View 1 (cartoon, rainbow, N blue to C red):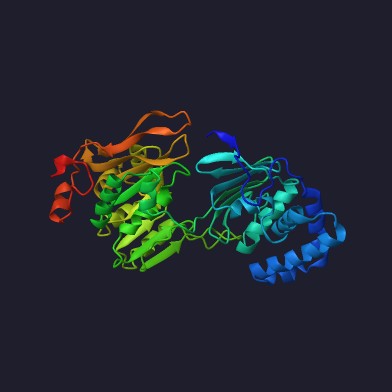
View 2: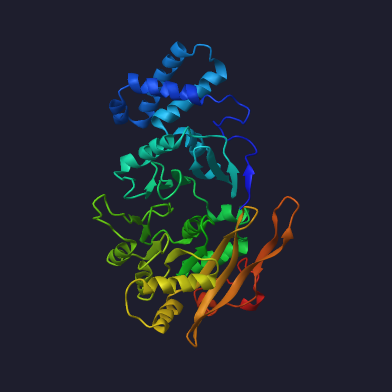
Length: 438
């Protein structure tokens, strides 16, 4: 992916030619720690703690640096607040709603992603210890630890954003990667408007979800698999009971009858782990109409296929893979991880029987996410799971500004479940340009 210089600083970030107040901010922060009871501050609600730090910072700044006035004074106060009760230099990046990921590689090597493109951020840490203090602020409220015996950890910010931390000796410098949580989830109409899918695809997904097709969404890291899963889940009827299983919780379904379940990592003693597989098996006892697994990663794939094949149709999940064919291979490998001594053909029979659709989403070089193809799982022939493409994105070229040119369209192949749709009264011509369906 191309890394570009940011076209302009995010709100709250200093521009490249603005004064660097790092030393003054550091000095004020140290004085603040001497004059304010840190333990009492931690017991306050976030807004009250922020207000208390702001008042104390303004008083200190007026006493120690009376020459700093106007906008510069506000910038220094804001940065002191970030250091005292926020996440240091990256706090403005985390507050910016247009930024989807924040990456700290080294004290002076910070990046963020906006609209699918990575930019160098105009912020820096003083040193590795400065980064470690921010890491401690992230993981301390969660009861987690990171040290030489456990040099990496997954955590979650109060707003639901995912955080991965890696520290030396595994890496030269402490590394922080934040996948930000979007409180305003995309709906299908938004994905149609931004070109991720066409209206024909949206109508097709509506019919598939309502007719209880089992759907797997496949894609690479950061391609928008969970976003797409959350969007098409809006087609699930509100009268159904839905159990979601995630690690961590990211989906925000619009239905009322939803029971979210979240996997739990081992504690400091290495005990009390709750795996996704255990949650899938427990979900079967909760009378679900639908089971939605945020991402299938391991042995839970076996229980997922079993559920799909035993009366829990209409299930949705995502998987990391580059193509629909690779997605089926990954699921097959994950079933083998369950430890059952099953022949490969038996596993493929389960896959072919349980899954109906594999939807591939791709992040192209221009940063935009698009559905590259929608494939139907048609059965098993000679030990091989057979598939056929129903929709495909055809790339026509690249515009001068780097935008990918092309369009997604039906391939003209009639799905094997077309008759099932007809019997259910689904209008197969509903926005889907497949004349052979009629």
